[in-house]
Each structure stands twice: as C-alpha cells, then as structure tokens.
Image (tube, rainbow, N blue to C red; front, side):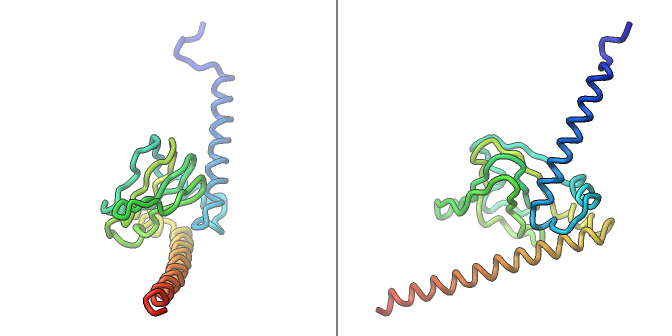
Length: 177
C-alpha cells in the first residue's frame, strides 16, 4: 500500500508535461520581446532564470511616479496602464509581450510616470543587478541585451525629438499667426 503523501506516477508525468508547456510559453513570449531578439533557446533560458515573476491585481501599482527606478517589466498576462499622475493622464496602455520601465536599466533616476495594473496582471521583473550579473557571467548574452535596449531607447529618443520639434512648430505657429 502506498503512502497517502506520495503522488501517483501518472500525476507526476502530467505535471512535468504541463511544466514543459509553461516553459515553452515563457520562451515564446520572451522570443517576441524586442530586447531579446536574436537570442537562441539556451540564451533565452538563461534570461528566463533571472527574471522575477510578479502578480498584480487590477488597480494595484507596479511602481509610482517618483519612485526610484530599479528595473523594467515584461507583461506576461494582462494590461498595464502607464499614467502621468502629475498631469492626470494615461500615457499608454500595454499588453502581453510589451515592456516598460527600461530606462531604469541604465540609470537610477526617479520614475517619470506610474505603472498601474489595469486588470489582473502577471509581469516578469528584470532588474539592473540581474542585467549586470548577466554581463559578468554570460557576456555574450548580456551584450546582446544591452545593445538591443540601447537601440530601442535611441529609437524612442529619436521619435520623441521629432514629436518635440513638431509640437514646438505648432506652438510657434499659434503664437505667430
């Protein structure tokens, strides 16, 4: 007779099967995140091992405007609203596979906006010390991630510059008809 605390062998096999599916889903999600573009399966697994899974309920803050920037987040499930509390406006709404807070990977300045779970949400936290550790222990992976983050930030800065110039021009035309 078996011990009541022992799992039947078939239950163990099923749990392994579903665990593999879950890992496959996470790797598929990571593969679609631009900062991990070009990483192979083994490299994605190395990244997945240093991510921190967090759950937030609808209406719960992931971070607040003015908080110290500790890292970035990748949305596994749900939606996140990026909000400027100082202007009382929603800047954007992000969903599965999108990321936010990436500026804090390069500096420790306070957050310029708040991130709020719009609905029940699961995210992966990727923090600056984890990136630095990756650069130290797996430099080829860390360098690829840093390069992709840099490209994305440079592209966003470029677009912000264009938008800034457009708004300045629009303002000038209003002031000088």
